[in-house]
Image (cartoon, rainbow, N blue to C red; front, top):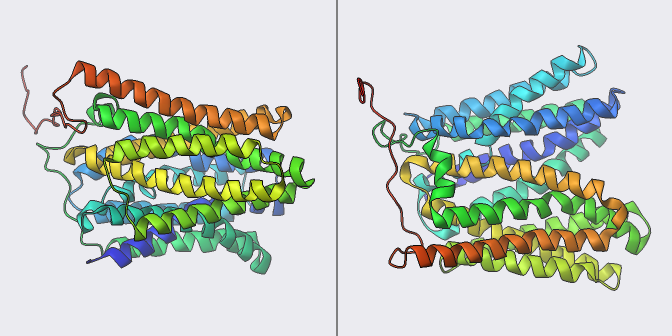
Length: 405
């Protein structure tokens, strides 16, 4: 398939850089004897700008050459991240934070933005499995690379190496055989694009699953440390639970790549999220550390397969003029909700790992219940409308249209 290998290489590089940057910046802040607050602000500056994603996505949907916009974002990410790393400890902290925030503004196009153009390289659910695999590899390799490079050459070189990976991805994405953006008369407006996530029943339900499921996703690292300490006596045991989760996620991504998911994407997503809620609740009652380790591996596997189902659903149900907006807006909201989940887990950590796991299971289970109720209500209101029906959207007016109205 033309360009697929280059797409996968670019995706792993840029997503590895994005996931590893958080670890690298924290290690660099500690090395430069900056306060813990400065490290936290750097991480916040990298993640908070994801909320500009819908605006960037609207530009990507309409760009004549989407490769150029993606490459510009990846180059901008790399150079801004490098600038922030070089400024830390040499210039006032606000300069480093501002540079990292510029990198963060490019972040949405590293995740959902890149996924939104995958359809130009071919069709089929195996492609979404490959895409999910790049998230898994990048999410695992990025932090590992940051830690390894820090041990070998220091945290500054580690962050600069991650920045270089993003720049390399920018060079690769320019070579992809991508079609031009949607014609002006067919593009969906910035206001109408995110509204698709609410107005189209299948996308609405998948969005609910994604957002409430992200609470568990963000909370799990915090919960793992607490739960591992309770079961095995050390925080390192909790870190090993996170490693098991990551390994399960990689395995799940590989499985759905080799054997693509079958059936209606929305229904698959509901079933997989339900399975994850049950597995999380079962983990809470693990009688020993070995069982918990296996349970976290299963959670990672289910997370990867459910993520692939949501990617497939967005690609199947989003209109042609709003593909990027659907993918990027979903990703941005997911990042925000994961942050909320981590904060809630941290605030409630005194309740113990078992209670936190049951709370995470309840959050994901409530998403499943909400999606099922919404599906029944939608079926009652529109009995003849297929589950994936696509309603027409109001396009962006051409220049001069609507004048005088």
